[in-house]
Image (tube, rainbow, N blue to C red):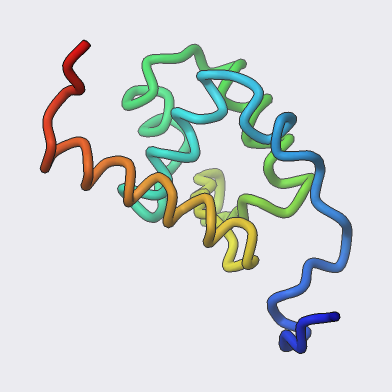
Length: 110
């Protein structure tokens, strides 16, 4: 059984495995920041993620290559945002849900 999805939802290139996309705390921090703030320049992502510039640039380049992040240039300033691919939307929804449920229920008891 195949799903009848519009072509705009299906990526042109296959996405990497999810383990690769979510393989580090740094990548997850960047995805979370772009989910919460929609679009930012690299300096603001560096500041919010508390990572060094080279690491953030490396992760953003990876995300651009695999179609997770879109880059807009305004002169020397580059603005990054998540793409509207269906898999990216699922990651965004997971992060939004995780953040909402954490503020509602508090920390788990052990």
